[in-house]
Length: 284
Ligand code: GUN
Image (tube, rainbow, N blue to C red):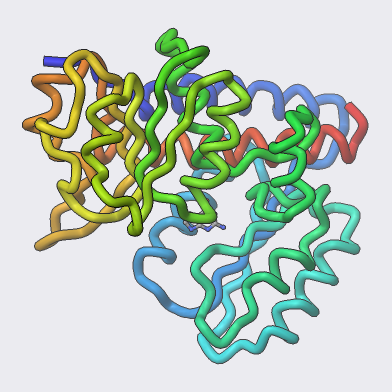
């Protein structure tokens, strides 16, 4: 039985620290940090994620401005809202929940967000800072949350073989840059990888972000590895990760549960990024 990397518990600790820090600013007469959250359409999973993010904001004292736009919103309408939020001195962060409906130009939307308010870290300017190892950018929330979790449990990354399964824009690609920043030897597998298990079996730290339930089986994991599960799939009403937890927990040194692992850390990273944007804006 392996060590459980408890993202829920660590999140509670960090969020309490964030709450106290914000309380300090408010007591000095500063306005509250403010995050604008935009959700286009009615994807049920996105609705849950966005509601979670807004609830977490309120609990720590971040004001959230909620924009729920209909499915048929045009790219132009979304760009106009973002321009207005970019210009609003009291808005610190702007989050556009992805995926957007397919008729909307996602790249154009991401490019339109002011890099200073890009708390998701998706703007190429912030992705570029991640490549350049510049501390003042915003790191995408899931990679940042994973980094905080591994660091909290004292899991060394320098010189380790980190294997990431999934090369998506939100997790796999930025995570590979962050792990490289931490001096790991990074491999990224994706749908064209010939034999994923050839890579996963070598991993000191295996991170799966595919959304394919129970993709990672015990035979694909090295004895004593650290396994991080980013997947969240709903199967017959049950939430499943990418990792076959029951099997893999017997072989791994440490493992994240689903739920209660990476998910809460992603939201905590969003709160941290929003606080960072706020502090720069008020020049605290
Ligand atoms: N959809 C899935 N994960 C994320 C995220 O971290 N940020 C945004 N904006 N959308 C997402």
